[in-house]
Image (cartoon, rainbow, N blue to C red):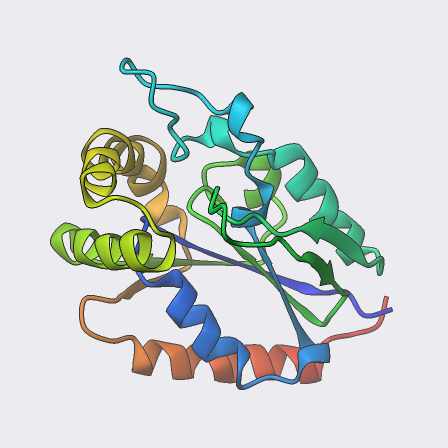
Length: 210
């Protein structure tokens, strides 16, 4: 079995992590790279912390099951398949799928808290931070949550001000300089993406068996 190379990709909400990863993954064969996202490790809605107005806050480290997340990553490292029910962001019109994560030479671990959580950070061989200006992230968040997830605009703005920004300042931004690579994504990330592609392809060809 080949020892997988673990890549952590993080950054603030709506910084462009998903677009970056979609562009990255489509250049590799499915058997060469496995993406396992923090988004599928939310705790159930009834276990989510609430703010002072009783609104569930899905943007804190307490919202996620990091123990299970890190356990699943270790299982993939050991050559085991992992199955996980898709998290549909409480969208009642969406039917969750059962996701299958298979061992691969490169495993990408994605989420806003992958550097904050010691259980995850200690597993990473390469740490990438996708960065963007606050007003750009807000615009992207409005489009994503309102259009893709069916959230009310007032709810999106409330959560961004009360949950997303305080979380970024406390739990995400302080770990930015722990990253090996910081990628600005105010406009595009094409040059950085090409560098990461070349680097990971080299890792795949050079990986030893264990």
